[in-house]
Structure formats: C-alpha cells, structure tokens
Length: 198
Image (cartoon, rainbow, N blue to C red; front, side, top):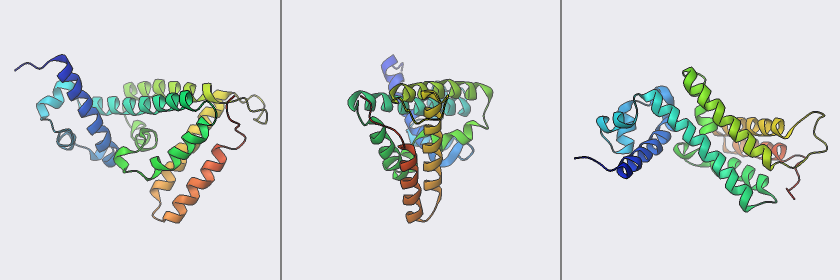
C-alpha cells in the first residue's frame, strides 16, 4: 500500500516529536532506535523510511527544537511588543524549568550531545543558533548602560547562555528551594537593565 505525501509528512512529524521527547529524556547515547520507534508508534522500517540513521534523526530533532524556540520568541515579540522579554524569561525559567523533561527546551537538554556529534550536525546547529540569536537581538531595546561596544547580538548571546545555564542548573539540583533560588536570580540578571520595547 502506498501512502500519500501528506501521510508521510504527518508520520515524519510524529516521529520527530517523539524522538525529541526521547532524546531530551534519555540523551543521544541512551536513546536507541527501539525506544524512538516505540515512542512514535512506528515500525523500524517506517523509521528508516524517514531517517537514514539515529544521528540524522537526532540532527533533525535538534534543529526542530531550536526552530520551535525561535518561532516562539517571534510570536511573543509580535504579541507583546512591550514586555516580551519579561514574558519570555518568566516562561523559560518557570514552565520550561519545571515541565516534564521530554517537553523541555532543546537548547539546554540537547546542546551537550551536539558537542559530541559530527560536523554536519554541529554546522546545522550553529546556523540555527545564529538565527535564534538574531531573532532575540532584533527584539532587544537599546541599552545605554550596556558595556561599550556591546551590540544587541552580544546581549542576545549572553541572555541565551544565562537562561540555558540557569535552566540546566535549576533542573539538575534535587533541592526545590535551590532550584527556585537559581531561577529567581537568573531572572533578575536576565532582565537587568532591560526596558520594554517601544
């Protein structure tokens, strides 16, 4: 039986979503093909009909996760011209810090595995990260108190590093009070000196 192109696209999207959840929970090394196919509800044959290898599935999953984050920021900027950054930071250090690991952001959960992958994955990750940085930078207001020579892009990089590191530390600790404290301190630092976009 031949499936339509639409069916194939839906199946691929389902596999990418399921793979993203498994890779976030288990890491690249802990996620086998069987776990990926089981989570997606497809056969091994169906999996290999969409991806040549586990590493290709990982690459596609990482890129989809970064694009999801970029599109989310773009939507926030469109909806909340003023105060989008505060909304984003609070969401990121709130819900995205406490949600199920499988639903967490790809940036803190998958970046460490990207460091260990092939150059093709790292190059694709770099390109997506640069687009994400540009999206954030485009929404940052001028900051007269920023260090001399500091561009919006520089501030976007620092913001992403701060949020990613903050979420990683806050998720890693077993003490809920410490997790909350990390989130609170990182939120304060992330929003320091930022004024709502006009």
